[in-house]
Image 1: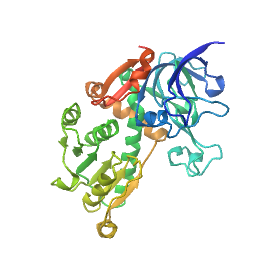
Image 2: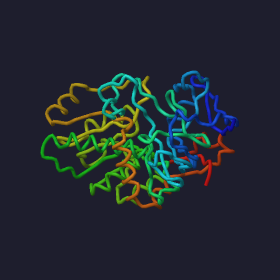
Image 3: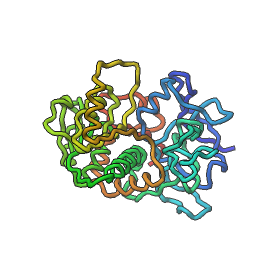
Image 4: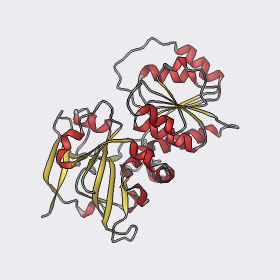
Length: 351
């Protein structure tokens, strides 16, 4: 039986990261499209799973293959959906088996009962293995120009959904947004700023870093970089995309938004921290100014397709500059150790 190398963990067991040399070849039941892995991106979710905070192995398995930010090359597709040699990315979340009302119409990002599954996270093997399989409905083709940066599609799909929902909410009335504030200049924040700049908006990005690549990456988009407090900004944004999850920042941006402003919370807080806060003042501001605060996570097929188009339109050199390090799979352990100036670390399986 043919085997593949795969990066795995035992869910719930801290520091169980291991490169397994004899992982079984992906079963045909996983999907008709057979893909050669090129690379996977690494993000905070992977670090949290490695720390044993969450993660769920597939039924009957003890270990979980990591990797949800994929990039691969099609080896075979008997359905004719894709051709051998095509670049492809796998959609992470699959709908629940019931399904709920949203999953039944392919809005699995809005699953109501929590029975969805996710590659490399929850009950589905991830993409950090030399070969993987996909069902056609979960395979997103990529332009060949994205052959070095296609693993950015997954985080881009997250902000494509955020912007989709911001715009849906905005059109509840006459809406002419001009100014956007993005808090956090990690991969999600920078990609949120990219999509804002593609919309012709005035973009501001706030982050604590004063050195390293972040300020220049923001300026390269034609945006303004701030390393100050939210309260010190001299404008009130029409739209906020909050990507830090830091409780103080979350509360500050709710209070900072302009009248009829929209605040999208795309960062996840860790919890366990209490802040003195005037909830009544926030309530008064949100109500009297018709503001909206909403949370956003994951993405459905429509958002993945929007993200692929956004990446195709982006400056390829700017996208490439988001990748701090490329680590061969033989050095996998180093890839999962965060560096002080890392934006996006990529684990490479093939070139």
